[in-house]
Every structure is written in C-alpha cells, then in structure tokens.
Length: 351
Length: 269
Image (tube, rainbow over all chains, first blue to last red; front, side, top):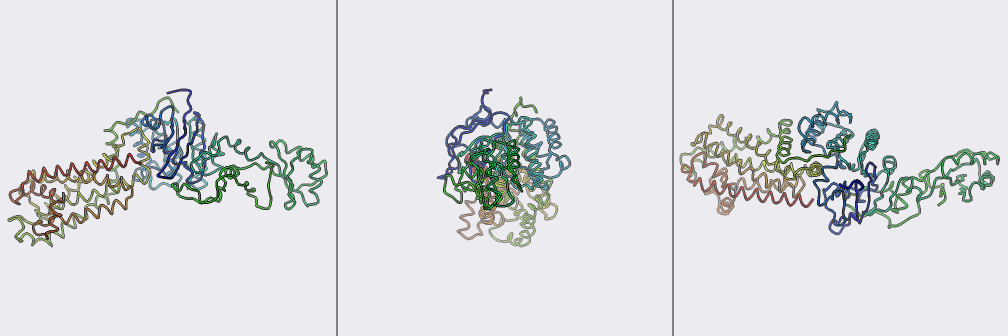
C-alpha cells in the first residue's frame, strides 16, 4: 500500500445504465482522516458512486482506489478496509442488535469471542445496550440507523461510506447521528458522506463535492464554495426611507458597493467578516443615523447549489434515484435566489 | 481505535455456518413459519387420504397398496418442492432490503449466502418430512413395506429433489429480485405441476395430454423414486433404480440451472 496516496482516489469514473449516464467522469480524492461530503439531490449519482467505491457495481469507465487498492481488480482487499452504511438500513430485522453485530464479526473472519466483545463495545457506544437483545425489527428509525452504522464499524474500516445517514430521521435522530459522525471524524476515520442536506454537509464535511446529473459541478471547502457566490455582508435596516440617504453617506467611506433597497429600507454592506460590524455601527452613530436592525448575512450552500446546478434544491422534487434527469430547469447558471427571508428584499451582497 | 489491522476476511465454511444459523434462528423466533409450512401438507394429507381413498380400488392403482402408503411420499415430494418458493422469496428479500449489499461489501465469499440458504432449506425440509412421516405413521396408518430403511431412503430422495428445487428458486429469486414476482412464478409452475404428476394418483388414469406433461414432470420421477423406496418397486410396478437415477440426474440439472441463474444475477448487480 502506497503510504502517500489518499485514502480514496477516483479518476474519471463513469457509469452508464443502458443509455442513461448515471456518473460522468467524476474525479475526487479523500485524504486520510478527512470527511468528504458528496452533495446532490436524488438522482445526482451519489449512491451510484458509493456503490462503485464499495465494490458493489463496476464502473463503465475510469478507475477508483481505496487505500491504494483498485475497486475492480482487488475487491477483496478493498472490502477488508471499508464500511458501508446504505441509504436503507441494512440490518437483519429478525436478528437482535447483538446478533447482527456478532454475525458481521464472524463474517469478517474473526472468532466468536472477539465478535462478542466487539458487539458489546459497539452496543455500549451507540447507546443500544438496553435494546441489544431485542429483534432489530422493533427498533425505532434512529436506533436502526445507529445499529446500521455500528455494524459497518465492526471491522475497524479505514474508509467509511455513509450513504444519506440522516434521510428519514426525525430531528432528534438527526442530531444523534451528527454527533456520532463528528465523533468518528474525531477518531480519524476517513469518511465519505452523501447527503441532500446542505447544512449537513456544511457541518460535517471538510470538503464538499457537488454532484448534479452525475457530474461534479463544484468542489471545495464549504467556505470556498460560499465565496464563489459572493462573500458575507452586513445588512442594516433604518426606521424610514428618509433615513436611507444619510445612512448611505455615512457608510460610503467603508465600501463603494453598497446595496440599497428602498422598499425594505435596508442597506447591505459587503464585509470580510464579523469584525467589520463595529466600524459600520460607529460610522452610522457618527452620522447620527438610527438603525432598527442589523444582521450578518452569509451565503448559504443553497446559493452555491443554485448557482451551480441552476435549480433550487429546496424546491426540488424527489425523483427516484434512477431517475437521472432532473425534473426542471435548463442546465447552467441562473441568477441566484434571494435569501430565504423573502422575495421583496432584492439582491443582497455584492457579486 | 486500532486502524493498523484490517479485517481478515471470512472462510467459506464459517460463513456458510453463520449464515445458515441466521436463517435457522428465524424458525425458532417465528415458529409460525414452520407451522405454516406444515399446514398445507397436513390439509393435503387429511383431505386426499379421505377423498381419494377409493382410488385404491381403480384398475390403474397398484394392487394391494393402501392409499395412505401411496399418498405420503407424493405429499412429501410436492411439499418440499413447493417450499422452494420460500427460498426465492428469501433471496429476493435479502436483495431488496440491502442486506445483500452489506454482505457483498464484506470480505466474504459471495456464494456463501445462497449456499447457506440451500442448506437451511435442507434442514427445514428434513424437519418437515420427518414430522409428516411421523404424523402419517401415528395418525394415518402409514406402514411402508420396506420399513424404516425404505422410509429413510424415501426421505433422502425427497431431500435431494428439494435441495435442487431450492437452488432453482434461489436462482429465480436472485434473477427477479422481487418477492411477489418470485412467489407468483413459483406458484404458477409448482402448483399445476404438483397435480400433473404421480403424486396423488397414478398417471395412467389421467387424460392423455396431462399424462404427457406428467411423464416429463421431474416431480413424477421424484415421487416414483421415493415411493418405490418406501413401498418396494415391485409392489407398485416401478423400476426403482431407474427412477432413483433419473431423479438424481434431474436434481443435478435443476440445481445446476439454479446455480447458473444465481451466478449470473450476482455478476449483473
């Protein structure tokens, strides 16, 4: 195994199903001990890529290596090093939580006592000890998902694939899962996380790859992706429209590209960070302008998504994973969506 | 966490044992599975032994044989064969629920899963056949001429044929990947073939077209072989060796077809 190689290397991987191109020449790398968030809506090709990397599906073109081993020519070596948690919790519902874990231990080639100990450890750690001897079919959605992740960790995988780990979970289950993932990351597990949720990728991933229609459309850290659609800004609100002009005069020395919106009585000032708030307040105070509101606005990943895929993920339907073509919108860029606060506010922040 | 070591990977025998256990645990946990699979043969046994009792007096029926002795091997073969549909459903479910993906992402042998399934079927088939035969003996007056050894031989034939059917259905289940479809296909083929065979009546009494199907029906020969071993070939006018060999051959063929279907389906995913 080549020590200098990244934990996961994907080079020009494509996959066709008949005439449908599910994945189109995707390249990516995941450095050991980092989390890559694979972001995209249903049908973007996330699961197809995970299945290829987990040796369940051969690519029609390109190469992929896990810890230096080729997923097509060395599947067994790859399987010794990966853990897979599918979109649909793949545990045996008629076995207990403990039995599910022990079974996988044995299937990994470990002996019975090792498997028993490992099962106990994981049950404890995933807060499943009380339910250990109940049949998994009686578990709640969150418990089942935790068991699924636990099962995928039995063999101490070098790389873990989490395919939409929070889809279908209630907010509590989702928070539990996030805490769990953060813990795994803390321990140094290399992780490929697929998600439809932008906030999830933002919170958990070191780097994000945005997938749309099987192709990689953007890549970077959450901060980098956000920068691509414009930086942060501070938006102040004044009491009445007549106050806008003095406010604009007071702020002009701070920035040449103020965005004044008459209707909502707001001015947006592009800033590099939160530390720029104080000078703004001071300038307004010096100018004798009374403000009624001040907020820091950062572009969300929704904006990134929209800028790159040309449609709004929040309004996306949920087509079947195999339904590759998105339901609406021409490809390419569209002007980005105004903030969630409402359509009346107009463009915020400079380009 | 120790990342230095990587998973060893399984050994075929351990994997098959563990996965067979996985299936057997379910019988223990949901006893209605086993009870359910006993209901149909019991109904057949009760109904047919009463309704068709007079068949024993018809000219095409072997002389001096009681209908229950004639019937039981037929019921054992058809029951075990139709239980094979359970394998199709089981495999289709494993594929649908994603647990097969789990297994396939582990460093284990792909063949372990269907192998374990077929061994489980064998164990369940043995339990079924043993219970049916015991009930037949205790309650219905089943008294095969060839005694215990003959009965054991009959069960052996039943299990061989059942094992083949199990593989055939494992192939069907993995190919169609849908429990309902697998069940329908199983029902469409097995159910009619049950009756177009020598399981319940001598085929000489059947209409010509049905006789033709029955003669080519592998179930007929499995029933003949099983029956000949239990009752004695000369008693019922059957060449025991011929039927046993023929059944062994068809079983190998059916299991082979199932195995190929399974391999092909696994490679395609």
